[in-house]
Length: 561
Image (cartoon, rainbow, N blue to C red; front, side, top):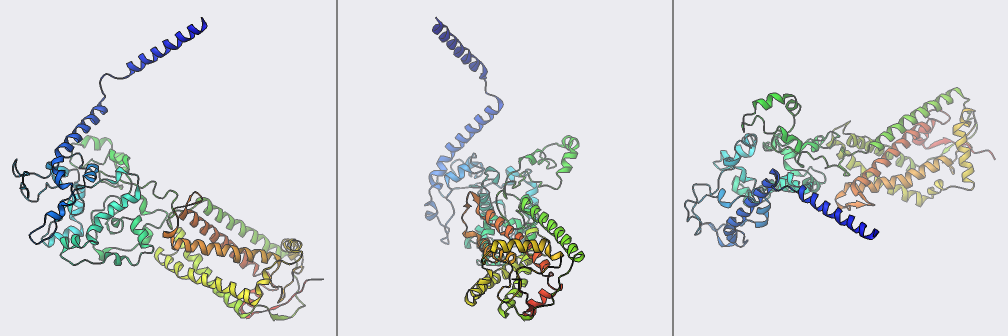
């Protein structure tokens, strides 16, 4: 009985659910469904109407069959798939290519209605693209080419058969490639370049010799980002070459121009993008939304507002992508270190100064050590200043900073290799090796800097030709010279030749990871330099240790037995 009741409940529940579901489905499609159904029908009708055209023009061999009177191939091939996916994919071919009469397309060559063989873009896009037309008419391209009596239209750059909007994809590299293709097809293609200018092909690639990592720039930046008059979507006004100012800081800065250029669709701008375009009577809308419109005044005014919100996510671009945690940690460490140094200096001044009345002056630092040391000082200074200039886009121009950094970085590599070889060959490398009872000696030396120095005590490790480094110095110099510097050098070389890095290392973007390591080690070395400079003042006089690195001579002091 219980089983029957349970089965009956389940059956009734299923019937009730089916009835509710059936009632919930509207009998008539809503407006959105109607719109998409109509669009699908139009697309299908266009595909059917275009089959006749594509039967010839969709065959790539058509370019070999038809030539001009002078023997030049005609570009008659249209990729059916590319056209189907283009912005005009839903249009019939004859919407733009108008025949002279009904039989115009029965034979080839076809008889068109007027010249050129296709409608002007302004026929459909006149008011909608009015701002773009105005930009184009101010462009160097338009002025120079039209002045020669040649035509310069939208189709001179944009192939209507394959053109797609960057808004249709989240693939930013593909967007950049598509945007640059319009420029490259003339500036790096003999046929396109001669067609518009009557000039022989110039090697445009060589004109960008000043760009470091040139290929990477070409793959990451649109031509119009540098050659366009303004940022955002106002990019159709191309400046003459002589007016282009090479300003690396436009992009390599925390407030980069890259984040406001045309890479990724920004849909929220469409709300007011058509106002004041004479497309419709918008006086009431303008009046009602004047505050919101004013707030957007300096943003891209084209119907296609773009913004690359996700471009720099987990990517590394010098001067743009910075680790906030790393930066804040570094500055916090600098402030803490300066406070410790100030307190330590005060304790030294108020404490008892050690008297160096014994010992004799000996040649403590060989010439090779001193030469290496001062060359290292110069290289470190140049690399720190130029590195900070690039990282924070300040101090000096980005281009100058990068030039200095790339010039002195290889010198540091050579100097480090030379010093390692010298230390090994001369036996000086033994100075860095920990001896017997190293841990105990390390604790004694730490106590000396924390307490004994203020009580007039001498360094427990002593200071002699065979024992130039105390235990703390050994730890510091081994950490810097044999660990930090190799990591800095390898990461720097990896960034210099970043095109050869894999995309991912240990699950992280390779460039981001390598750059974070490089910057982190650089910060560590800056902190080391600060401590090193302070400890240089702790000799028997403030400048005694600095003087000894110039003359090579210093007063020896042996530890008590």
